[in-house]
Amino acid sequence: MEKFTTLTGVAAPLPMVNVDTDMIIPKQFLKTIKRTGLGKHLFEEMRYTPEGKEIPSFVLNRMPFRKAKILIGGANFGCGSSREHAPWALADFGIRCVIAPSFADIFFNNCFKNGMLPIVVNDRTMTVLMQDAPKGGEFTIDLERRRILLPNGAPMPFEVDDFHRHCLLNGLDEIGLTLEKNKSIDAFEAKQGQAQPWLYAA
Image (cartoon, rainbow, N blue to C red; front, side):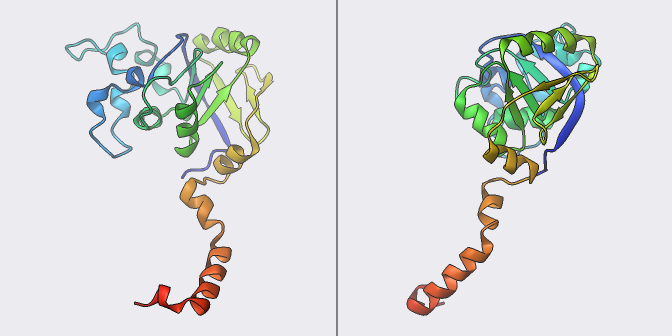
């Protein structure tokens, strides 16, 4: 998994509450088990008409937000069904950080498992972000220092638990976390192999 230390980019404002996973990636695109190719269908029903034409007013169809790396959403972001395709679609589009006042639990945890950083902020911080984001300036997410740098350089702190921070900074998914304990696993298997050799018989 790609490490996440700092991220600099445009932040697309999406001031909507209860953005569910079906809005993020509609159900007809869930047939694939690949993590690539879903970005073009991100927010499909808000980005395109039924005929497949772009809706110019939607934020991700406008410059500079077509290249957004950060998404600023409303409360209860990622609610609905527990589809891992939702963070896959965001990541494939290029978004690696979602900021919101609150998240649905399963979506929140799926983000970390896929190398994305979901940030929970209070109402005051959200107001500032939503005021600055439409201007199209670049924000910086500094995970090491746990802070968001506004386009004018002003820092705004955020909280993230130590475990998830460790995983993102080191690019560790669940398999990577297990492999961190390789020496202990090898020692256990060697000891068990001597005590119960039949378990290791070819």
